[in-house]
Length: 175
Image (cartoon, rainbow, N blue to C red; front, side):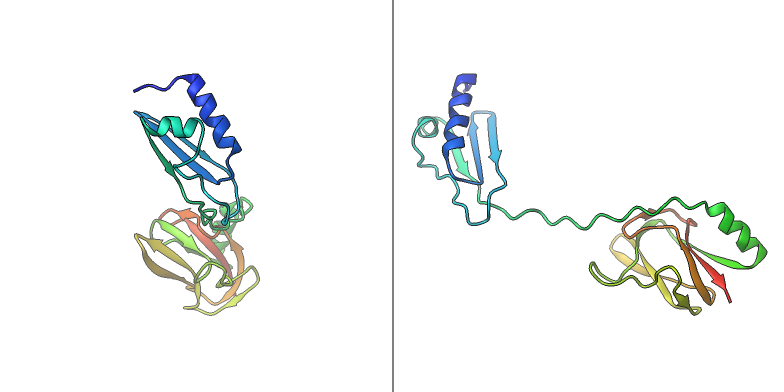
């Protein structure tokens, strides 16, 4: 079964007059979905609507889609300035800085949970064994720990960044 452009135009005009957040209409293999940014308590179009929708009901499937809340979108990570790791690796070779590298490929998290404070910030004093962040691989979380005591001088990854194996993540100025 086909639907003409005129029928689609009539349908969209009728939907525009309805006070609903979302409507889905399927005619044969053609499916039309209209969604608006309406409030959660806005009524949804019913299948008993008059006009072109009612005319299409006899030969199609018209479904109303409940109003849904906006999807949860995590706060996007703040882009870290691109830091030249070569300078820090050179300082590591001189013994003044310890560079903490990712022990595996995975996702770096700076805090225990969303909304929680970061384990460390720039300038934080750390002891050997302190947790600096978390690495997630296949829903398994591993602590990224300081391997030297000192002050966090650089953070190379942002919360939620994918990191490669052996990629520098922190630089700690040793005391």
